Length: 231
Image 1: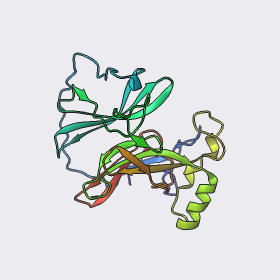
Image 2 (image 1 turned 120 degrees about the vertical axis):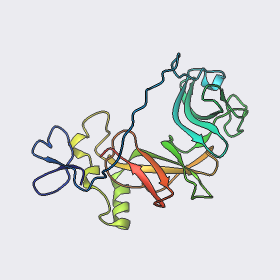
Image 3 (image 1 turned 180 degrees about the vertical axis):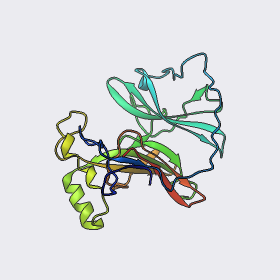
Image 4 (image 1 turned 30 degrees about the vertical axis):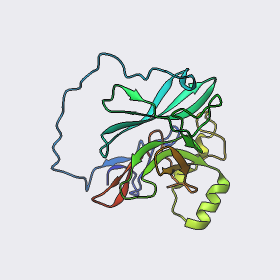
């Protein structure tokens, strides 16, 4: 147990403007004997910034995920770039984290030309990680998302009660940043063979409320996927 629990032993979260004012914080069955070391931070002389070089990124490049690929020693970046009021997804790579190359992928046409580093995806990417156990689609992403009530009905018909009722955010649907009354929170994922052409999985990974950043990785020791969510 690690979290806030009410008098009935149920895990509770903040919903709207209520509680958990009557709940207690439990820390039983937690890991112990862990030593934490702190290291001084190193600050670069200049802020981290990718300077726009080409027309498809003329309005800026915004890094989204960066991974160090130990197989080839490259830092790999997936980013959004803006041009002419549009947001596009692109891929960059670097050997030193300072100089970033834009490999010509030949996937997406821009101004009648595919000689660019734009990538293909059927929806915005989430946080990307590498799965060494999947030989077909080792690159994966995970992100918070939403689903309609019709999609939830189909999900429950297939999986029964394997969902968290807190995902139904009827309490906050009036807030503009959340969505309309059909909004059901969930966590979705996508896969790719090469990190350049992406496909979103048809079903959500889980149906539960997870706010803001979601991260995951494949634990080779456990041989399981491990995710970090903000419930």
